[in-house]
Image (cartoon, rainbow, N blue to C red):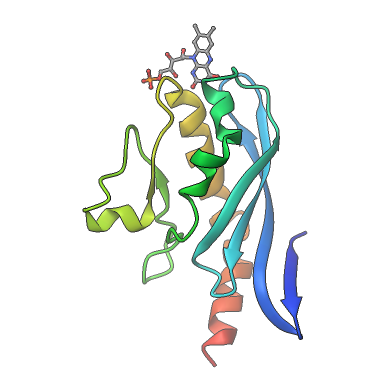
Amino acid sequence: MNSRVKKDNVLQKLILPVYGKGLWSTLYGFLALEADAKTIAGITFYQQGETPGLGGEITNPRWQQQWQGKQAFDSSGKVIITVIKGEVNLNASESRYQVDGLAGATLTSRGVNNLVRFWLGRYGFGPFLNKLRSESND
Ligand SMILES: Cc1cc2nc3c(=O)[nH]c(=O)nc-3n(C[C@H](O)[C@H](O)[C@H](O)COP(=O)(O)O)c2cc1C
């Protein structure tokens, strides 16, 4: 199930429940998309058991903040958002769809990368999001 946030009956945001394995635990959170169904509005994790200061930094608002405005899909609709190892070069065009990995927590970061890409993909919300995008282009 997913949630569509509407105002005056106009779609504002899509809230997608997501989960997947980190290093020590299953990470549970929400990924929000803008009404275009391709721009990331935000990510949060409400339950996880990673190491505080390492993988646990996925709950740090500063780290979560950089997801806002990132592109989830390329122009063909393929999932493109990626958590990289290290810091994103904000001068590079790839920065539109890249997120910093957490220092000292590559395994947790990889878990987040995998779960986000899974849930946006064809076995997750991909077909639903594709349909929304094609409807809004009518
Ligand atoms: C006690 C302890 C706890 C750790 N907790 C995490 C963790 O929560 N997430 C994580 O990715 N790596 C954790 N690591 C580190 C991993 O073993 C691994 O070294 C790290 O993910 C590699 O990331 P890096 O390439 O950024 O250094 C922990 C290591 C130790 C010794």
